[in-house]
Amino acid sequence: MIEIKDKKVNISSKIFVDGGDPVETEKAKSLLGFVDGQTTNPTLISKNPEVQRRIREGGKFTREEINLFYKKIVAEIYKITNGPISIEVYADKNTKSEEMLNEARELRKWTENNYIKIPITKEGLRAAQKAIQEDIPINMTLCFSQEQAAAVYSATKGAKKPVFVSPFIGRLDDRGENGMNLVENILKMYQKGDGHVLLLAASIRSLDHLLAAIKLSAPIITVPLMIIQEWAEKNFILPKENFNYRPSNLKDIPYKEISLEKDWQDYEINHELTEVGLERFSTDWEKLLG
Image (cartoon, rainbow, N blue to C red; front, side, top):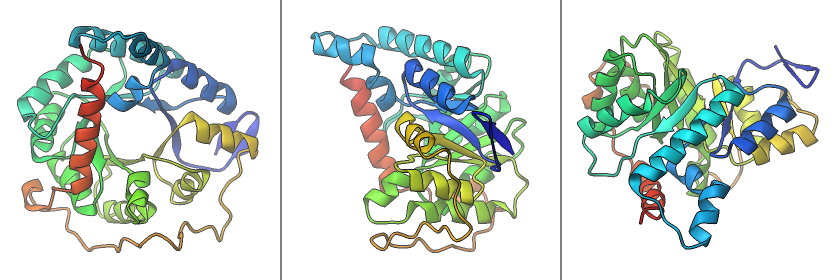
């Protein structure tokens, strides 16, 4: 049970803001009365109004300048939320684990309570294994399959802090698959585990996505301001007992019986959408650099 703007709401999920603009975070907090945390990524930071204004005026950033800007934004967001803030390492398909780990060490210093987003690739999982040994909180991002989520679980056993895994619902919907099925499947699979990995439902594109994630009791849901505003306009409605996110135009993703006891390298980690996501994030970042 939580309280949203003096209204008691019976949900167990933590609500994060998905964005790269502290003004939006402040608006979300004003609407909800709280914010449990925030997720960021290179694309969201590239859409920040200050960044867009500089680009419109013909300006670019050096890599040092964009990193300092990102750090400033994270510090401002932290003052508003005081909750976990996910900050993403720069990675493309060629980035090695040691490069990700070195950047994770630096990003970890930015605030007292942040999570470092690392992509679910072989190199990313190698970096994650070493990161948890150094007590660096991690959010394994760009998750598009149950096998990837199982690999995250296996690779991060022994983590002292909860590990986040972020399935991207909207991007699966975009290609005709029911992304909410993946959330449901991962939660069911993790029931057999020790609880050290928490699912963070990401790429929320609609109020129905949000309501479905609440219905499934996703531990964390990260939500863009636009969807939070829509939720507020509808007086923070909750999913009805018979609510079921099953759009007829989307193909169901069936549940697979997968053991969580295998070595992480024995799972099928590669996924086309993870590769596409990496390319998109790195391209959005590179566009800002002079």
